[in-house]
Length: 396
Image (cartoon, rainbow, N blue to C red):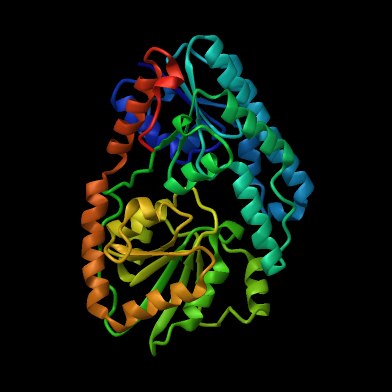
């Protein structure tokens, strides 16, 4: 079996590419990244095919927000179309073509015309569900949001229909497609892995404190207001909240106006993975309160570091852990529930340690990227059986 992958950036696609290459199943991986940024990805150069002209300049542009939302939207649209056209022209023979949603419609059609199966790899909920949740969130907090580009929505829905199979990383994502009328037999659950070599416990949380961590960018997806509500409810003489990831000045200012931002909150910006595991290991809890999240790889990373995770039901949390055992699952948009769980950890220090130990064992059982590669290959092989996509049923 030979598989071709396509992705505008890297995301989890390069983790999949390494697993396929280890099985001698990778025919090529197409990306918008330039070659020099991929030299440490552990893949032969001749298997990586780049179309970096628009993506690289977009990544290199400082202060993109100054361009204005209209120009940014057009630039992102051009990145999708140009990569798709490049892959369509250069697509080598393969058995399965896997394209990240939003940028692989024409290349997917081309793959099918060459006798291959087309897998739409969607890293989030159904795009209309995503759009609806984000619009509602913007209204709730008075934040600007024009909605997802209608052209992107139309293109993704065309991909969903065209593809022989759609892979998604969480049960929440699966259900969002079923709720939108997609046949359950076409959707396959494929949770992301974690690099257990990179993420492992490297320290202990400080005694007598309750240090809370958030990892990721600040945006409407992430449920930042509900994390802040929960933290505000926490009663502890030595508490802290740290944000690691790309900050948003606009969101911080809005939270200040809402009385939810306190001066003891630390904003670190980007933290390299080598340092991130130390930060996770020293934190008592990590909260991912997303209103819409495909999976949230930081959850399994934190669990591998014995950091107790508090995750909303709209993440991969329900697929990763049992509520109350290795971590907590809370309803979406529920700051009180987050606060209650943080208070529980603060009042019962032994609970935090026990849950952290269980989290390590659970994430090891779930497996790393090797198991992800095994599951992906099983899906792709089933697609190649007689009747194609009709053979991919159940198991979600």
